Length: 566
Image (cartoon, rainbow, N blue to C red; front, side, top):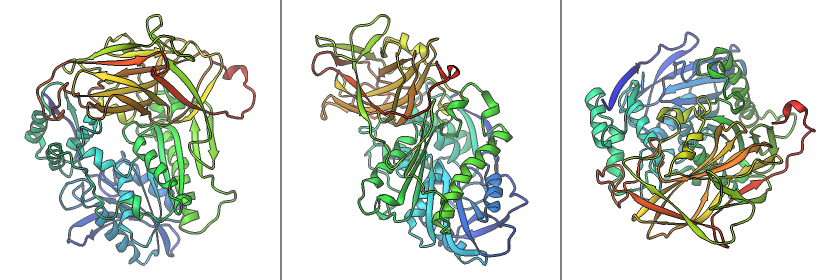
């Protein structure tokens, strides 16, 4: 079967430390809202979190976070969003969150324990509800920490601009499991077994209509941009301090979040309201340094790791709210940006990306087994071709759920280099460490036989034993109308390529099932059943051949000990 339910998640009872209120919105719908009060009887600032994943579940761990914030003197308010778990109303993502965020903030300010100041925070979808609350413009909302999310998350999740953006099946996969009704579902969905429409129909038969999925497929007809903010889009209405919190190994949402950061830092009058914290972790918070450590370092499965994560991460959020809600100045000035360099550690700077120098690698037609990635271009220009067969796409290196916990299930991608529909370019083993921070950029010219094509680029670290780990991802839609000139900024990372390792770049035209497969025609990839192979060619060598540019940085550090080498 294409759609099989593995587990159904129903609402957990509220914590014994909370009092649950049914808070009425402006249209009379009541939302289940837990309030955790500090021990001190007084008025307090509030931390508001609005989630679709069950406010009382172990998955969200909000009952644990609440205890930390209580200990720091905050009232912690956790709410199930409209249509989910213990809340009433229609189950539909994005549509109501700006208004509901405002109404919830208004309710908070009327409570006897409120001092009239609110900080909003949350991860993933409840990172979006953080932005929605900011966009609402309620005057009590004084600071925000949106985490592992993006302002325009909805545009990619329930929008369908497939001729401009590579469409994510991972987003539709989430809609069916999270946004069908009040419950949550863990389902095995075989996206290769049938058409998208038939799989959505199979889900409808098993658990009911998912309006969000149906609407998304409907939007794919005219490809209109989805905007849940109305005239309150945060790019044009944000005027409070924001700590942008991202993790490098989150290809689903970090690119949007870093785009938000760059936008706000480009605004002359508002730029200094914005701060950045970017870590070497995946969407779930699993750390790069813990790759290979297994479940004992997974905060979703290990109580001790969860406690450590809460102490560290909630501590940083509370510090930000101490400063920007309650006026408690830190002992040292807050750095504008804190960002973690993989295999090195945390760095601070007054700007991100930091100053860098271009380190250029040229894609070469030469090489043994794989093509070369060289400091100098080949003397003669040529082209390298690959065939995209939509009936046999390049497989994603993890299953579709693991895109959200990429490091917890960190793939060894060495086998992809053996595929004929993947171009692989690799340096010689590095003689010195190479550090970079920012977006690697791939430029070149691609020709293609179809009316349009997808291009995926992946940067990887090849270890001396051949283990191949992903570092950065990029994806683009090329079309006849726009031409085949490619300037692809891959996803941000800050990383050390260690001495003795190789830098590898792979280029392909599919990544299934994470992304929808290009049909090889001008048809809608969500709906068409007509698929034909297409041929792509990349120019390499000579003056205009393809090249990869890393934003290389210099890190001042103590001399290495023997144990740190390799």
